Image (tube, rainbow, N blue to C red):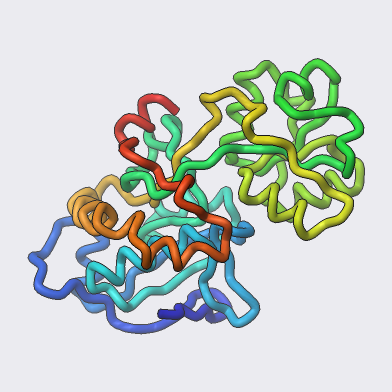
Length: 279
């Protein structure tokens, strides 16, 4: 089912949860009042983005919308914002849940609640074609004195600092398009982002290569979740029930195949609780 954007808020309709009891929390209050569920996401290739026709695309959006549809919720508004505005916007009740490729990280778990994982994936770097400085890991960037560009609020900021990079080697920009521009212009030597994003840029830009995510430490393998307010824990529990029966099905895998999501990206038995404690 397509969900179409307007200039600031997308789609219309009345959200409902057929045959279910009421649940506490601001999201359920909106549903009970006949208001649509508001999904916030950033414009990030592959993960979550509006297409040329204004439809909410990307594998995280497809999965989230598929789960909501399984629950009986058909009225959804989708709102595009800067990456750095996702968690603050959720906390400020501007959205009811956030998608667009949020890794479940301990630092984020302190501020919002996460659904059970919907995917696992690693990170990588975009580099100029041929990788002239041979930058494949954070340590390579550290030891060469190179500059890495990444998104403000991205997990790669934490990862780079854990590997020893200082602020003088980390350029932070609003999102992936600015990362690509910085590498192309030579303002940065490598762009740290998810492998999905990096591979997309390498496939669509002849002067850009992507590094092997397996070169990075095992602890950089991350798990993707849907973000909720803590106050909506009861609704999220129902969401997780639907998630468990939907993620990994043929229908789900078919809906995300165009984005490069394959069976190997399924999260397996890893839980949000474990991920919050270990990432």
